[in-house]
Length: 331
Image (tube, rainbow, N blue to C red; front, side, top):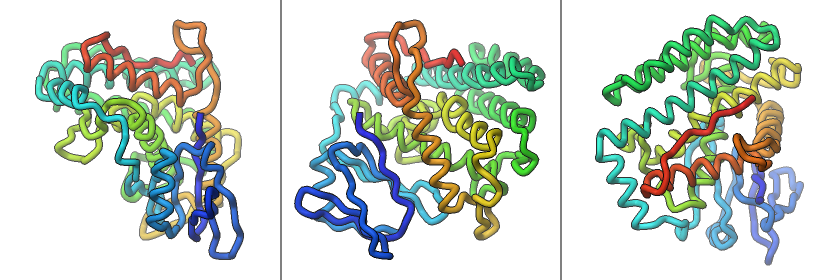
């Protein structure tokens, strides 16, 4: 499986015959092994030529762009991605059918809730008093089945996340990483900065995997395509937030790997600095490639493979082949 490549410095990416080089402004050169790269994450101010983009397109390499505050800007992908007219029609039909759309959106929220509970129960077994949050989220989870409208479902999802985020104060041992409340644009403290950055990395990974299937990333079911150009990756990523980026955060903070010195203040917000980005991205990629036993099957997979399987399960649901059941962590 191809791996991601992260660029945090300013410079230029150039093609040199059948080799691609990243040349930092300092003059330092680094070769990019294009046959082993699936996507490139660009955080620095990097110049790219049309000639290079054509070459990367032929190699099937995606480019994910982030601004100077690590916010996701967009993705360049080869025009010949695997979209299917038949699948697109089915995606639209499911979206336009209010009952089918609501049923699918409920499955995403159920996946969120059960994976949140998996995390909370894990820490409860290890001496963290997360039981009050577990009980509250279990009550909210039981309400999913009786929800009658999309707006009510979104409101319920919001309550689940709100309760879960409050548990961070119990799970995290470091007083330098108090949660307070969820803030996004801008994040107001280091913990919120990591949550936002981890979510954006997850969105990008999921989007890359969607482009390898027949699904169109523009049509989501929990998140409305009326609000954003791309939404399907947001739907799928929600399920994995508690068990991938949030676990990365707990590891980095509780093991003392990341510290206050790895953050910067910019325009009223708090963001990871370059060293912080490198530390977080390295741990995130390690988590994505962690090998674990797939639920219910004697098969070892990475989280990246599990995400791909999740998207294929969704495609089969949309095509009417089999019912979609969200991935639930056994952790």
